[in-house]
Image 1 (tube, rainbow, N blue to C red):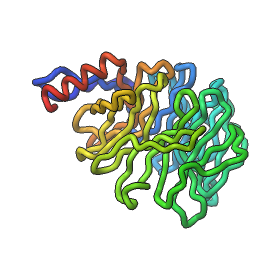
Image 2 (image 1 turned 180 degrees about the vertical axis):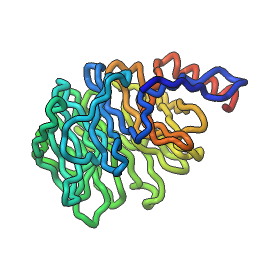
Image 3 (image 1 turned 90 degrees about the vertical axis):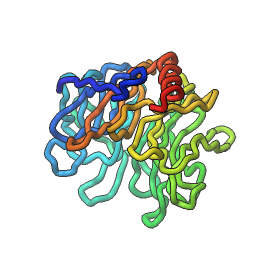
Image 4 (image 1 turned 60 degrees about the vertical axis):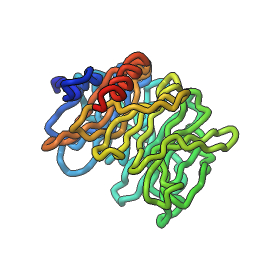
Amino acid sequence: MAAVIFSNGCESAPRLPEMTLVLAAPFEEREPAPSPDGRRLAFLADSDEDRANELWISGSDGADPQRVAFKGALASAPAWRPDGKRLVAAITTPSGAGALVDIDPESGEASPMPAAGVDPAAPSLSRDGKLLTYAARPTAAAEFAIWLASASGEDARIIAPSPERSFWPRFSPDGGSITFFSRRDSAGEEDDVYSYDIASGALARLTQRRGHDFTPAPAPDGKYLAYVTNGGGEPALHVLHLPSMKDCRFSPQGRAFAHPSWSADGELLFATVRSAGRPSDIAVLPFSPRRFQAVCAMAQDSGC
């Protein structure tokens, strides 16, 4: 799975961060989840082309990808336990129902976990390993809501309730807040990114534009937030500097992005990327505060 390099394709302006395809197989790969120690990358793949999401793990550079011997189809990206020894995953059972499981990546052994609601998906664990959040429908007929539970899945409760869909919850680095996307303020028409403070229950709207803003990912330093927006047409990767609320596009033109996630040191951004005529691949872009400022300046000066 050799690396492929792309630039932004804007010849009159400084270059956007180089994008490397760390995984570029002839089948679908998506929803990367870097391990806490930065050495491994969990992701979903469809090597049999049967639309069943398999769990795979490779080196963080895409080397030596191996399918985990887990008998089941994943519904969304897994979440690593803080010690890197197991993963929490949302799966689709043979009956078509959703469930949460705790997976040993070495053996593929999976232990069922308690999960409230229907069709749990998109789990995330706090960095200290004490809390779990995920999306699930309160009832089969309801829209997805955000749930907060203990790391074992017990004592689950809905946070920031709304009749409109809320999805893809992710903990802040300090575990004090949860970021997610929702249609709660647009009558179900458009997705925006929100942050929920666990202690106070306060809810802050972080994005507001035409189109959909989705799959947020807080950076390890708590100062930046990566997310995807299709407000400009194609789904593009954006980075938001939270102290200043400065927001800049961080992905090249001509490719559709989704599911950003950060390396543990905050120096790499992984994402699902799709080019015309290809199945989805997993890409990585370098990140630093200096690079962010340069990208924002480039966009302001050139409109590229």
